[in-house]
Length: 178
Image (cartoon, rainbow, N blue to C red; front, side, top):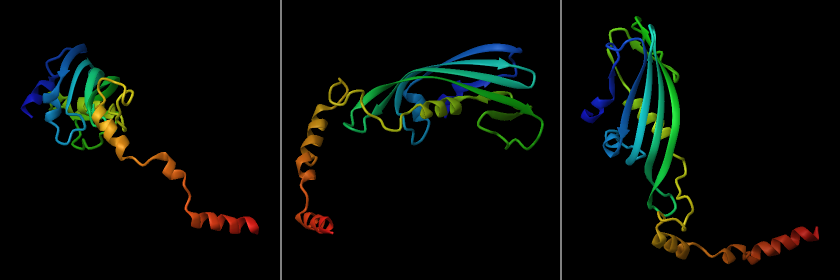
C-alpha cells in the first residue's frame, strides 16, 4: 500500500477552483490490488479536481493500454483503454457517512485528503472486456500460433457432428407415419 500514497490528494490546502493532477499507472499499481484482473499496463490518468465550498467535482480521463491473456490462445496482448468518468465528493458534518452512492462520496469535514487509487482501479477494471480475445485470432503478432494449432487438433471435426444416431432416424420414421 506504500506505493498508493502517491494517489492521495491533500485538498484542504487547495484554493477554490480547478486543479490538475496527473498519474502514471503501471505494473506496480496493479500489484497493490489482490486478485486484480489486470496485472500489467501503461496508463495515464488526468484528474481535474474542481474544489467548491461544499464539494469536490472529480473528472477522470484515463488513456493507455492494459495487457491481458487471450481467452482463446492464452497469449498476452494489449487492450486500448480510453475512458472518462466523473465523481462528486460532498463534505458532511453528520456521523452517518454510510450513505455513499455510486455517484456521490461523502467525506467528513475533518478529513483533509482524498485517496483516488480505489476509484482509478475501479474505472480501469470496468473497462476490461468480459471476453478477452486477440483482435484477429491466429492472424496477429500477439496470437500464439502453437496454441491455435493445438486447439484445432483437439477439437472434434465438424463432419462428426452431423452424423445422426441410427436410433434417432428410426424414431423420425415413426413420427412421419402418423
